[in-house]
Length: 195
Image (cartoon, rainbow, N blue to C red; front, side):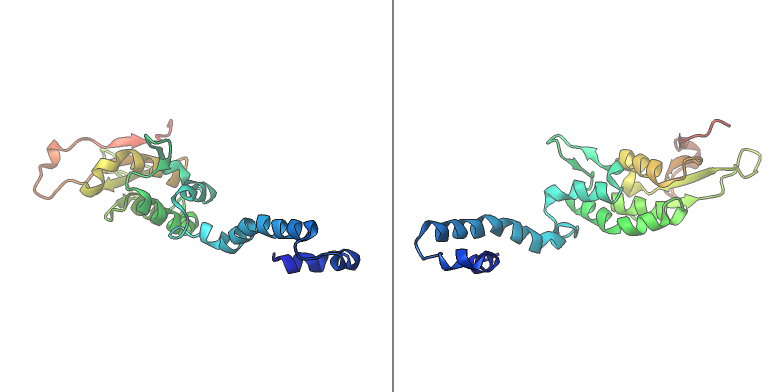
């Protein structure tokens, strides 16, 4: 608010007593100056909520606001971030609305995994067979592409947040076509039900 706008809000008797260089004039100039940073922030507030324009310090708050902060890890500098860095965090925040829309589904889990890791190629198998070839109820399998193998902690946090609570998730690393499947590590289970 400019000084003349502040003056227009004052009673007429006060307006008439304002003279240039007088204490009241200086007080009004100081009032206008004190409000300038707040007004600038109000003009820029939309930029704070846009992941690609927000300052880096704002990103953990946006992630929390959009309920994707559970995948962040505390870094050595005391800041919460993703393994993929600030750009990956901005991408995750940008995808948060669509992730929320599809949360609890295979599509939502795949989107969440891709957005949090920056790697395509996660496979979500909704029909997992037991040793007798029968479908195991409430069990899914996530096959992790080789490019995301070094982000296991992020992947496990995403799965915990993105799958329904009653579902057990087996996590498998993708086996290259030339590798021997018998030598692959057995899948690890996440969120196993008691039954």
